[in-house]
Length: 147
Image (cartoon, rainbow, N blue to C red; front, top):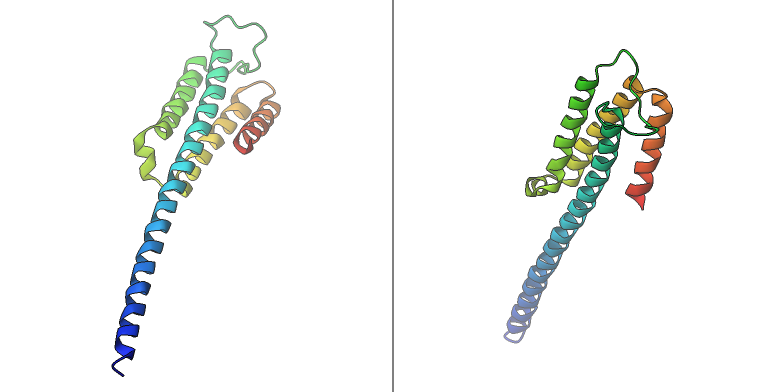
């Protein structure tokens, strides 16, 4: 019995150390995964912003763009449309800030999906050939997200 106590004590110490090391390692993995998803969504946000800027440039009549892809329907207010696109851009800029790091991946995905849905609806309702252009944009964004 006297020999059993030191063996149990050593085993308990080893188990304790292993548990602490495992918690430490898995904690580091979570931090790395958080950084990875933040970088991924930040880059994707920039990609979406670039597409929205292109739409905004095309529909702005003060800019003389040859062969614009996105043309507003005749009964749509241009200033209001440009302001909506600017609002989307402001929301997307958030994903490049440190504040976005406080959100989980699912929260960021949800907010990005909401903005993308609004942009999709914007194009469908306000642009000539909106359905076709929205589908093209969706496909381009999907390729860039997966690539």
